[in-house]
Length: 287
Image 1 (cartoon, one colour):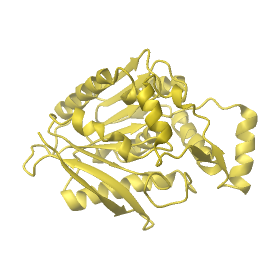
Image 2 (spheres, one colour):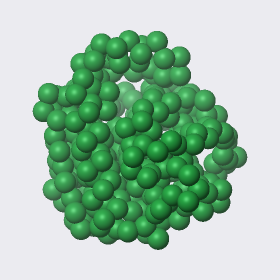
Image 3 (tube, one colour):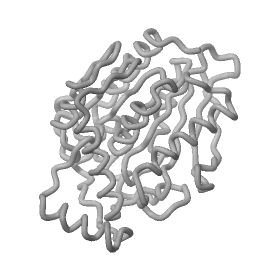
Image 4 (spheres, one colour):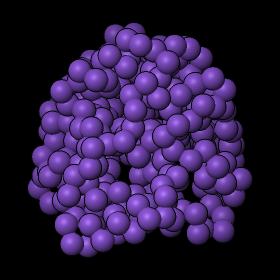
């Protein structure tokens, strides 16, 4: 089934223009479920265009946007005063989809890496607006030396827009040399990190870690890398263990690096994604 492509901008809570990409089946498609994708740190929604090809037979819309300060969206480069701004961006995007395409609760939220951190927080806060949650290599913890955290806290307080070079080594994202090459030459990828953003990410990771339990009324799936070199997989397992949901599954792709949807065996990951989407739609029917 061919999907119609739409691209444009929407206004977030503070009138910043954020770029979005949307793939929709024909107007009379049943269920009107949309998969909303939240990208990771430094990247952008254009890196998820392949999802339209892999999911074209699922009678599913696909939507993504560039977080503020990322891709082609407005905002200071890889910077937020508070992580709340990302959560507000997600809410604004949901409101936009509801207003323009009459999409209500029929949304499956998928977050990758930093987008996974945002997706987890948003899902906990607004469970009534979702059909299901899928986390891909979520950034729920980092292994950062204590002295560097103290240095970053100082910079976040006194020079919050100070930019580091992102320490992520591209060959540790995927074993696929073509994907590594594309990552390196993509002009929209921000290979930087602001002091305030790092501070805020760590703060919101700690918020999740402090929760004694997490109860969600819809299915939750976690797809994670077995050879993770970017985020702390132990924090992901800890989140999964304290999670209560009608259905919950965690699948580890043993020989995969962080960007599981860009790995050499990415077909396996898309099969797992399709499985998750079908279970979610069966368990939590669309309105």
